[in-house]
Amino acid sequence: MNEIESRLAAAMRARANDVEPEDEHAALDHITQRVNVNRRRGLALLSAAAAIVVVVGAIAFLNRDDGKNPQHITTATNPGDTTTTTTNTPPSVIPQFDEQAIWPFASSSQTFTTPEAAAKSFAVEYLGMRNARVGNACCSPDTAFVEIFPNDRSTAATVVHVRPRPHGDKPSDWIVTSADSDQITVDTPKPNDPLSSSLTISGKSVAFEATLGIQLRPLDSTTPVFQGNTNGGSTDMQPFSTTISPPATDQPLVLVVFEGDASGAGDMTKATVIPLSAAGAPQPTSFYAVTSSGDRVVLDFQGHVQRTLTAADEEFPVATTSLPSNVTGTLATLRGRFGTVAFFDGTNIASYNPTTNAQVKLVTPAAAPVTLDADESGRYLIWVDVNHDLWTWSGADPLKVGSGFNSAAW
Amino acid sequence: MAAVRSEVGTTATLAELHREHYRSLVKLASLLVDDRSTCEEIVQDVFVAVFRSATRVRDESKLPAYLRSAVLNGARSHLRKRQVRSRLRVVDAPATDAASAETGAMVEEEHRAMLTALRTLPERQRDVLVLRFYLDLSESEIAATLGISAGTVKTHTRRGLDALAEQLESRR
Image (cartoon, rainbow over all chains, first blue to last red; front, side, top):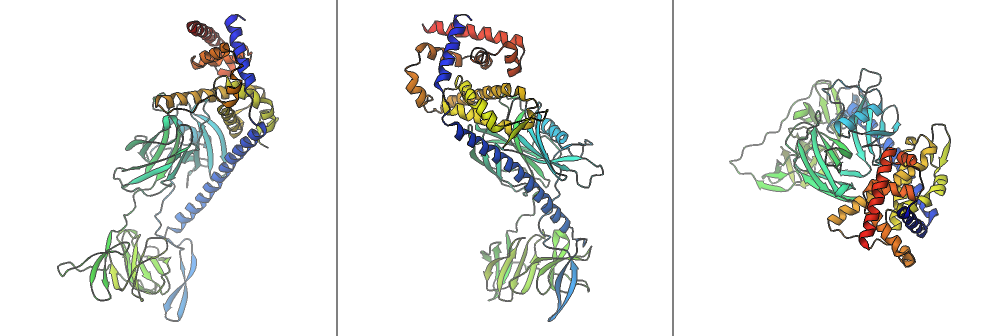
C-alpha cells in the first residue's frame, strides 16, 4: 500500500469507527414492520383484485338484461294482488364495462402463456422499460401481480396486474389490465372512471426531481393523445394534483402516470397505469317541471329553479310508451340509450328489456310516483310522487330535490 | 420471520442478516454519506428491498456482496437527489450529525480532507476505492459487487487515487 492508499484507508477507518447505528433493535423492528406492511399490501392487492374480479364479473353478468341470471322479485299486478315474476337483479344503470386488455393490444395477435411474460412485454413495449427485469409474481387462477423493475439495479417496483383473457379460447392467455407503483399512488381517477371534459389526477409520489409524467393513451396505442407533467415529492412521498382537459373522445383511454429515466432517453422507471372508461352520458343539465300552482319551470339536476317558462316556450313531451301484456306496471317511459323501458311496478321503479323480456328493479321510491321520465342516456330518472315531492336518481340513492310539484320531464 | 430463500433451500432470517450486516453496512454508507441517520435509512431501505424481492437473491453466499452493492446504490441515489436539491437551491439542514460533530474535534484534519476529497470523486471511482481500501475486497470481488470487469476496477482505482492525490495536493 502506498502513502495515499494508506492515508485513505486510515481516514475511512476513522470515519467508520465514529459512526454507530443509533438503536439496532429499533432498526430491526422498523425494517420488520415495513416488510410486513409490504406483504400485507400485496395480500390486500390480491384480495382487492379478487374482489374486483368478483364484483365486475357480477355486474357484467347482471347488467346483461338478458334474463340469464334469474331472481324472483315481487311485482304488483293489481292492488292487493301480487305475483312472482322472474327478473334480473338490480341495477342496470351502472355503466357497463368489460375489463379490457391494456396489453397486448386488441389488434395484436400476441399471446402470453404466463403472467410474467405478459408483464415483461408490457413493461418493455408499452412502458418503454427496455431493460425490464421481472421480480416476484403472486398468482391466483384469476389474477396475478408481477413485480417489474426497470433494470438490474433499481429497487423501484412497478406491480403489473395480469389476468387470463376473458372468454379466451386458449387455456392460458394472459392480459395486462393495469399497473401500479408503490411510489406513485393515484387517488383519482379510480380505475374505469368515465372520462370527462375535466380530469383531476391526484395522489402521492416520490420521483426524480419530483417530476411525474402524465399521458393519456388510446387503448390500442402507445402514442399519447395527451401529455403533461406534475410535481410530487423528490425524496419522500408528497401529494400531487393536477387537472387536465382530455381530448374529446367517445373511446376509453389509458392513464399513465410515470417517472422518466433520469437519462432523458424517454424510458419509464416506474409507472401507475389506470384504464378509464369512455365518457358516459353527461348528467342532464336541466329538466322541466310543473309546480302545484301550475307554473312551468326549468330546474337544474339539483332542483334549483333556473327560470319560469313563458307561453312562447315549447311544451315538454314525456317520452311515454306502453308495456306488453305480460308486464304489469304504470308510467312506462323509454330509457333512450339502453332501449329499455322504465316503469313503476307498484313497489319499485323497474326496467323492462323488450328484447329479452327481462325485468330489473332499479330503485324503490319513498312514495308512489305519479310521473316518471328517463333522460336520453337512460342513466337518469326523474319523478314526482304522490306527496308532490320531486326526485332524481342516477344509480345510487334517490335524491329529493324539491317539493310542490305535479310533474317533471326532461 | 421473513427469510431470504436460496436455490438450495436454506434460509437466512431477517434478524440473522440484520445482526450480521446492519452495523457494517451503516458504517459503509457513512463513508459516502455524512449524515448517520440517512445512512441508517439507506441500509434499512436495502433490507426492506431484499425481503420484498427475496427470490431474486438466489445464492446466499452472494448476499453480502448484494447488500454492499445495494447500499452503494442507495448512497449514490441519495447523493444524486441531494445534488438536484442543491441545484434547485433547496438547502439541506447541516448534514453533520451531533455524534460526529462531538467527535469531530478528535478526527484529524487529514481525515476530513481525505473524506471530503473522496466524496467529490465520480461515483464509480468512489465506490471502487471504498470497497478496495475500506472493505479490503479484491479486484475480482469488487468487480462482482459492482457488476464491472476487473480491468475496469483497476482503472477506476488508479484514476481515483490519482484524483485524490491531486486534490489533497491542491489544498496545501
